[in-house]
Length: 494
Image (cartoon, rainbow, N blue to C red):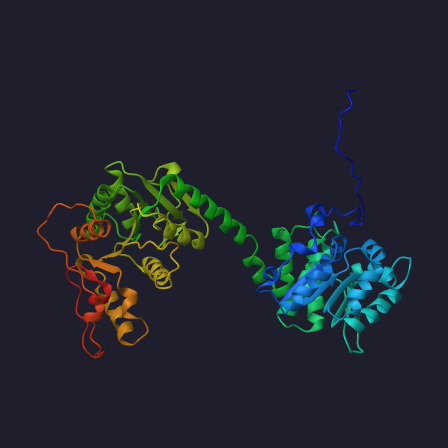
């Protein structure tokens, strides 16, 4: 047998979830006091320090000084009985300075702090708690499977919190860190000391049920179930991770196909609708004019019609699909190429991705949001984009055309509603300036050509745009006119 060279060896013994190993500080051991600046602490209310900071020359003391300068409170976790053993005098100097507001330690660290040797006992833990609470606003000693004890400075009463019931300990790694995080979460929420201890025990109880110090979805579910009940637990069971993965899949598809024109519209309007042919025609002609990808929700109705128009000239198409559209199940064979669609379980990831499909990342991008006749889902998407534009949160400083296809006066009622909001002062006139209303496909094409300075063959109709500031009537009792030829929304609601 040929011996294989190794870089080192590590033996880890685990007994009833307790591990025997030495902490590797890695690059943290190289950090020194001069690496810190007061700017590092901007915006925080608490600074949590580990006793391992003593291994960096003057590092812990400097961090406490900067925290005081930043008007932060300091929490200190004693980290290990060996840290206490090695730096006992320095530790006591720091604690007795009164600059540590909250101190965490376990039974063994408490015993080492008070006595020279011996395993931690309840009496030693209480003695350490008394000592710590003389110098810190809050003192906490964790007792493993017996929970924790805590005390405020000046209080005679000791708060006791039992450990969580029904917990099978797999690995205690990270239990102290998670306890501190749960406890400090409670402090930030201004909970009582008893509830802060309960939060710490719950967080610690969650992490010991898994191997390693990283919270899994099962750990989070268990924690939220204990904190807020089964409903909250089911809400967080895996949605955050799933949405994250769905968004990454959507972004990869957008990167592959490129941004372009995003069509929104009703899934219920089929080929017998007078709007179907118009949507097909528009999809084809906009793809010819802009030469970009045609995007939609990948569902039936207006989304399919606009996509069919683009496909008729072999233009690039893409879809961000979901399982249900306006009461009709759409998880069926798609009209989109297999590699040009993403299927989302969650509406949130689909909505974000569809907006991103139309965001202009650079000047040369030619994109738009086009709203064909639609229902509640279409209105939801419309008002979301209007709000993003209003708040300047669309994701780019480059403007994107937003066009309503007002076929046969479909959006006249919406214009009246927006006019009522303007007249009642709930919407400002300038916020509607860049939203366009077109009564025909020709006007949509004129709008896009004008916006992107593209040549257009004359069709005998002059494009007329108005700003609402000069047209809106302030008399709320007067009727709002119907929308005729293409105009900006704020002029249509005059």
